[in-house]
Length: 152
Image (tube, rainbow, N blue to C red; front, side, top):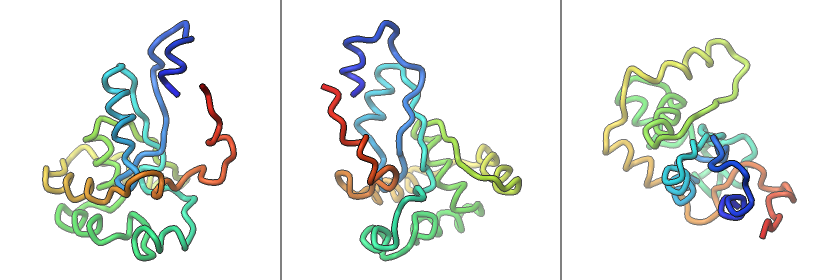
């Protein structure tokens, strides 16, 4: 859709492209395109999204949500941070902006406390290995008819 927009845009590039992005659905091609074009990719659902059904989580991670899956839990334990902090740091280290949603002051503070550590190359590889090909791990807006619009 960005290439189509680029053909008609009076101002290019857009400052930000906000898309679903997490280890299961990393949107690598789009992230690389945005980097090349100077567009900030803002990852929503960086913690795994809230639209996944029990059936979907069963298909993806044997019934566990992203913040509950063994690789994320192990990394969090290894570096003494929370699973949410691992996933937010993962997004940052991939040059994505993040906007975690919460109404809890405690979680807001926890989510903001991700600058005192870095994930190792092995941690990043472990999280990258969670990728599910195609759209199978898309967890947000899965049933929204607007996502099927053809902008060509």
